Length: 122
Image (tube, rainbow, N blue to C red; front, side, top):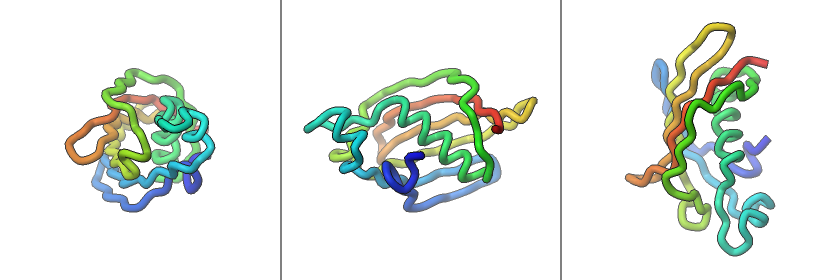
């Protein structure tokens, strides 16, 4: 679990099928110290975990990542340069208790990543 140690939620805006979260990153977290010392970059696995945890928080359920349909890394997320990021998620309910989560992570006008994950309820 990364929430409240690696990142914290500072603001949330919900609509019918969307959620936008403002996230504060903890640049002192050991993951950032190891990846990479002196030039911290958020690992791709942490991006996937962040999306999974934000979805679980929104829907109040636990999920497994069933499939990563696409994952585009457009810019690295350096917590020293971008201590706060925005995560916009659009949810689509699928069959068999699956959820499709289309996500864009950005700050101001700079997009860091775009992805679509398929999550299945635990």
